[in-house]
Image (cartoon, rainbow, N blue to C red; front, side):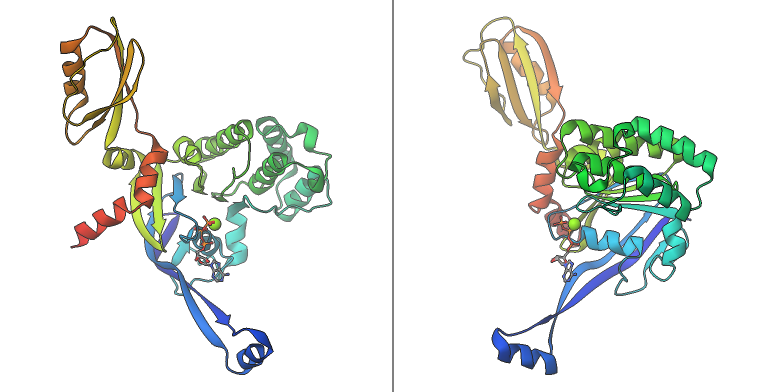
Amino acid sequence: MPAIQVENLSKVYRTTQKEAGVRGSIKALFRPHYVDKVAVDGISFKIEQGETVGFIGVNGAGKSTTIKMLTGILAPTNDSISVLGRDPHRQRVANAREIGVVFGQRTQLWWDLALIESLNTIAKIYEVPKVRYKQLLDQFSETLELNELLNVPIRNMSLGQKMRAELAATLLHEPTIVYLDEPTIGLDLVVKERIREFIKKQNRERGTLVFLTTHDLGDIEEVCRRVLVIDSGKLIYDGPLSTIKDRFGKYRTINFETAQAVNGLKLPDGTEIESKETRKLSLRFDRTQISASQVAASVMNQIEVVDFSLTEPDLSSIVKQIYNGALKEEVELANG
Ligand SMILES: Nc1ncnc2c1ncn2[C@@H]1O[C@H](COP(=O)(O)OP(=O)(O)OP(=O)(O)O)[C@@H](O)[C@H]1O
Ligand SMILES: [Mg+2]
């Protein structure tokens, strides 16, 4: 059985709208005017234990809403989620024991307590055996560099320190599934890297299922093998990260180092110059029109090439295309 099973999941937020002024307020009291907002619109997917899944989409696409339903914080508009065989909302307490959640935008730790006191309390709540707690504390302190922070209250921590503390606290009861909603937001590169490493390690060593939402595609590239793309509440892609790159990485770049200065080169069809120096040339080409070896052959026929290399397609430019509707068009085409 998959660890997470979502079938036609939807969430409609119902809000009341009132007209301006006191009269509007009074009117709204007696005859409220409801407005429905479909945040998640019938999505389905299955995730097996041990998978690393990146969940991406533009602002307002429905990512956080989905995570809140998966974790049991929000009730879906229809019954459609099973996490480790449970309904995460109805069986919230049992569900909470087996999952960990991190929201990058806010901390779940006690503001005034020193980190070690928070961790002690969490270990007690989740009944982590003493010996195990000691082991985990040592491990986390090392990988997340927490030693200097243990006696610092959360309120005095920087954003990056808080996030490291948060991760340790979230993983202390060794959850089977961990949901991360923008865990690296606002962090510097070094802390980002440390956090990615830590998440990967949990997945590798414990088989933790990782469900990660982020606008930082570096997180996805480093941590996730599978990607879900959500757009206006609908799932528009579910598949390996590598397939996204193959399908949408229409343009590649091939870089040449030449023996002589590059002059008067006749470019083959489907290519254009990306950059040019005296003895260096980068050509961007459309993979659907011409292959890398054809580009290389054409250049080598005209000038002496010392070395050449191919640049991998850049995920962020691909995702930009997807967000701009490339995928939607394709899905619409496929559906007729
Ligand atoms: N409590 C709420 N009441 C009404 N509408 C809401 C509520 N929470 C979210 N929404 C709406 O639902 C839609 C999806 O919001 P959600 O927070 O899930 O997006 P997101 O993909 O996480 O975006 P972001 O990348 O900005 O975090 C948005 O249009 C948002 O305005
Ligand atoms: Mg969000």
